[in-house]
Amino acid sequence: MPAPPPIGNRVRDLREARGNVSQAQLGEAIGVTRHTIIAIEQGKYSPSLESAFRIARFFGVGVEDVFSWHG
Amino acid sequence: MSFREQSGWAMGALMLAMAAWYFGRLGPAAWQPGGTLPVGTLIAYLFLTIAGSILVQAVLAIRNRGEAGSPADEREAAASARAVAWAGHLLTLVLVGALLWFMGHGDGMMLFHALFAGLLASQAVVHLGTAWLLRRGF
Image (tube, rainbow over all chains, first blue to last red; front, top):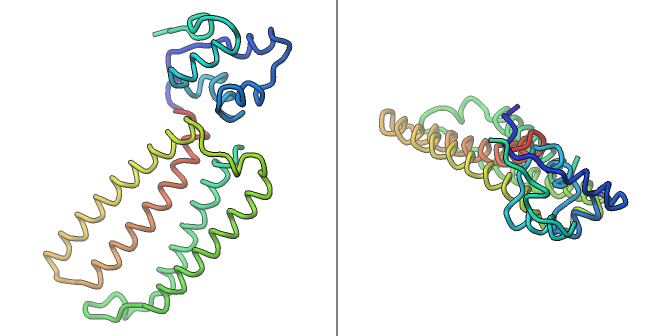
């Protein structure tokens, strides 16, 4: 297994805080598949800058409230 | 498992199976310098591979109705692009090796087999590499 990218995220927490928005709903809202949302939450994939902004915009927060750098 | 990962594993397995079938069917004469090109086997390989690909994709599309019709998203496209790059490197290595062999031995039949094997291997790498990256993460 490769070392996970040094980027953490709170996507799962934010989904749950927003009344359990499903991974499929979030994926549809930002234009990716449910599997990509799962990969992001598991730290297996770092989304593009555009998708990161879309996710933050979806939750009504800033990008740094969703993603954090652990490098 | 996503539609594209399923597709990658299934198509990769099909490519490997068809390559094994093709090279298993070649008779000893096909490997000799000046041997005859296995045109019949080649045509059968192409027909069976195309038919198998259509069948695999149809079955997967039925099983994943929602996903199958939608375009690849950014993660799937990136995984595919990386796998295509690997396949390109492999094809380049095989091409250079086959041409060097040809320069040394003048064996056109072996050149044909090597290049065809390289094409089959690169196709398998595209499909299996994409599936592996989607499974493992990157």
